[in-house]
Amino acid sequence: MLILDILGEVKFSYSGQFCQLAAENRNKESMVTGIRLAGHQLVEPQFDSPADLVGWMGAVQAQDYAMAKWAVGVRLKGAMLSRINEALASGEIVRTHVMRPTWHFVAGKDLRWMQKLTGPRVKKAIDSWVKSGGLEVSEKQYTVCNDLLGKILSGGRCLTREEIEMEMEQAGVPIADECVRRYILRAEVEGIVCSGADKDGKPTYALLDEQVAPVSELAKEEALARLAEAYFRSHSPATLNDFVWWSGLTVREAREAVGLISEQLVTERFETGEFLVHVSCRQAGNDAVVHLLPAYDEYLISYKERTTVMAAEHCPKAFNNWGIFYPVVLSQGRIVGNWKKTVRKSEVALSVSVFDSSGVIPEDALQNAEKRYRNFLKS
Image (cartoon, rainbow, N blue to C red; front, side, top):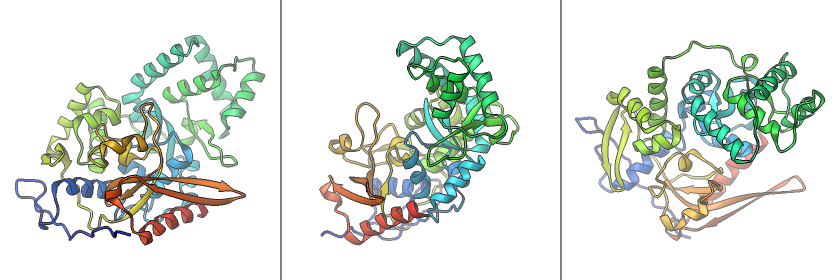
């Protein structure tokens, strides 16, 4: 089996330009992935706390709940599922709809200003989606449901969607055609509910004001700057279009956000194009690490242009045209394969398939990646 080439140490100097290579064998393309690996905390992770990691990333996409927990765990110094569950139960991390109209993990302390910034667009998108599905929900009905959610969740209760549905049915609220899902979505966007502590392995909902302590509001300019800073310090090198896609902001808002932190960004041309790079970014000292990345991982989904980290002909194996992203194998900064977990009689079986022949993975590195994931599930 071909062993991956371990590239030499790379150092940077800041003398008018952002990245000056000290190792001649490093090309511009590998610089992009090397910086991203470090920013994404996939090499030499800097955080022990799940909340600190999520806050560093700005947000972590979380529509696949179990996989999203691994997206956090794989980036921590010690990947422990129990610590992530504790952070979710305490409100240090919150799962809700924010930015683009999908689930994200965000740090509890960041949720309110992020909702205020992106909530109106998310609300508009959700309302459009509800109507396109042939379901009309009046504002009066949403108000009734919001009030009811406040009553049934008060006192620190954490209920699954199924339990909420039962309570609403008993109160005479229509629950057919996934109505409850729509009610909860609206309540999330309006800052009434968010995630609570897991119950028998299932996600629950809790009242936001009981789950997360209030914080001071931010002016829009400060919120824009914070969001841009979080994205570019953790996702660089990236483009304005990447930031627009990830944040759900309008192009005008995104340009304003980037302008507000312009002194923190440098424009750098790499082999695959021109990117913005945060001045705090570091290069991975050793980018030969192999990871089993979860579905919807930030390393892939948080960029509009993804051929920077994988060959275009292989993209359909990592995600499809309907927005479904699959678990993938990361090796030397590149997406080179898929992996799958199968559970039979409480036994976890992992299978890996490599689709990029240029990125054959050393057996020992792959075994280490599998071991990290298995240990995470047991922790």
